[in-house]
Image (cartoon, rainbow, N blue to C red; front, side):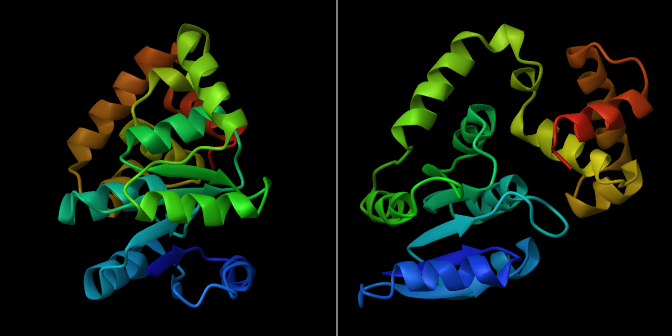
Length: 206
């Protein structure tokens, strides 16, 4: 089984290799960015993709969308420092088959890879409960009002990207990004673009 790890921190890839060193059936492939991750996926067609959210350039959410656009059957796990159930829910909504927190039990990643490779899904029990609760109370969560695509644009705004830069990065028109920003402000009850950027930073998206 071939597993693609897309993460820009070498220590994470090394940790994944060490974690699965005792399993000769698993071959680890590595990519440090969304761009090289997509290239590696298309060239190697791994059985499972493990994607970090905070990648250079576009996020793991956007990379998942691009991979699934090329191969609807791709099996994706999001592996992130963020253990907020909202992010796990967004990963699932983006087409991921699993979500594992880097701060959780390391064995969860191995379990997730095995489950997803076998055609199943995986969420640690605590995260699964958190998602159920978050969705049940989604009216109270401002981020829960946004689509995965909107969250990606919000993250890029919070990291200092301009609307034109975001349009180029996610292959959309400037008008589409501007309209999406306006829609997000309406959903979140935010009046100005600067307040939208501040919200992204305060929400730790950037």
